[in-house]
Length: 476
Image (cartoon, rainbow, N blue to C red):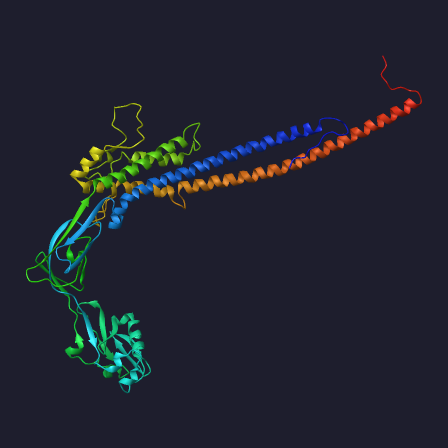
């Protein structure tokens, strides 16, 4: 709000005087406003840089995610094939080692079963157990788990009670006028049904131990490369196959002298890996360049941000550090990623990474596994996990980008607090300015009124003196 006033009574330039006095106070506010603007620009630059560094991290994950399965496969493709897919179904993870093996399946693993006598009652799930005979209220146990029964319980209720008792370790279902208890596990796991204080087990026939009503579960029997093995499952993992990352699901037995050949192979794609590395290099170079611009002496919005400069320098140093002291390829330079060939141009920007594609492809061609280990490490051996260059970059960026105590968030919160405090200070100054303007306007208004009153009194006195012949004009 602006208060306008002119010296109506006195004719003095009072409005100009008020504007001049208010302007002196406004200059202080303008200085604060410029400081607030500078803080906001600094905050905007910081947020932009945070996004830039996030892009670097994203570029690294396109490579490192290859450690966690084929669905994230950029570095290499792992595939598995079987000579007879009616016998086995095979899957592999990213860590599977190229392998060829022969598999003979003598028998599949089966589950133990215990069956009731055949009875029309067990053909209709809505029928009550009392239709079997004089069923007593009470209970029985399956593998130690207590199952309650009553004459009014239906077949469906009984099956529900069994299937909802995890300690029983069986699955119950109707089949051919019988209730079948089937072990939840493959192999030799006998099912023990014990009568306690009800006669239901006897009426149903679960106490009959003859072979017709009891089927023992069997282990899977197979040979891998001629070595005989057994397993309590038809799904063979690395423990059973001896190949990390390979899973074989047994579907059927093989014919005599007709083993299945299983082959795990990798299809390394140098072009895919190179493209991912180039994406990282582009993101890295932008982060370094933008940080240098933002922190430049005299012109940078973030000049003096020592923590930011430290982050930038740490990333820059890491690109020339030894990553794997004992690796085939120890540094990025070994696979053609450098800050430029030395000695060619003194004006070259040594803060920017460049890729010698020929050297990279040559290194990849000679030893793709070593390139992979240099870039993203290895987790195939839990006792010898290595961390590659991209993980080291991620570790550094994780600290800087952490949403709790990381540099970018902490500094952004600090700047936002300063901006908010500055806004409060400006608002307070503006309120004070309005009060000041009103005060001096009132003061000048009073002064103008007094001057006007004095002028009126002087005019009246002149008129009175003139009426008696006295002139107040100046004399010479």
